[in-house]
Image (tube, rainbow, N blue to C red; front, side):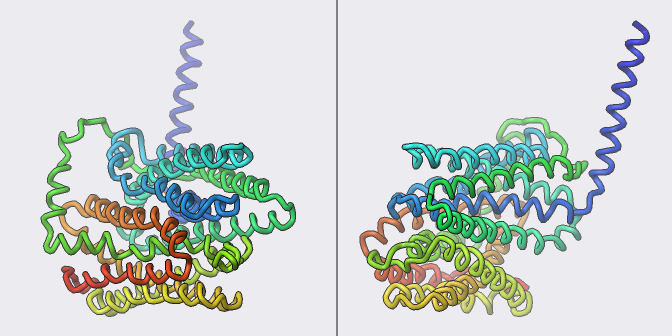
Length: 440
């Protein structure tokens, strides 16, 4: 009996020492080991839901109106993610949430892949896509929280550009490399369903490998400890957070601006891929899946990254007050290029150039918008205020996105893109009523 107890004590002590050594090793991890991979993992499921799914359903013969409505309805989860953010804080650790949600995302993406061969593939794949959206939004909360807990203030400032870069790389991988691969497989296999099944299996494996990698590589910050569960309002000023947000100066104009600034873009982005893929007799550009992946998903995202970098430099030098008008125009004026494309149907090189230019302008215009949201989110509760602002912003993206497919079918592509240009005006007209700071 004594020997058994001694052996048991040794096992417990050995296990404790191993855990202590592992925790000590992990807690000193260089952020380069996990910041890039975390934000790549954050961007991949988002682009699958918001961009890749549109191209997938288009290639499988789903109508534009159904694509736009249902994929936007699924993406509404990002509007409400702030509602269950406290659960991520009070149940388990951010690290556990990251590893767990990435593992669940692997399963849901894999389910989408195999659902494509079913008779009711649209229903079952859409249900799985809803799961991807929910757990992706939950994963976003955990990743952003872990970033703040695991990095010092100086490291947070240094790596903010790195996290943005790898998020965009995930966008390129999803809307560019994966779509291009699907297009190449379509051409070689002659089977659209099988091609997309293979590509989605590949995407799911990436999420599975990232889950395993992060289980090993993520540090154990002292601040990322399990917090006791408490009731909703006890010790946490939810009402004060909400009231303080809505007591801000010129809040009416601020709310309308956040809601309306990206209305035109929201309508445009949902119909770009169907426009590029549709046949000429339907008013589209008749591009192949691979061409869309290369032009829109790769070159376009590179233009977006370049625009975002330039926008940040300009605001840091000149301030937001000076930059916001030209940057808003940079966001919205390139929409006129799609009107030209819809009427003229120019050669491929022209299509590619226009899309890169439009995405470059979007990168510039969105940077100004992001800086404005940061200005609105100052005060005692900047994180919560930023979450409220981004929730309103997401609502402003989802509503026009849901109806864009119906409008396109009623108006046709040329008139639809003209309507997009007019929808951009209300957001810009609100700029003089905003409480702008220099933002340098």
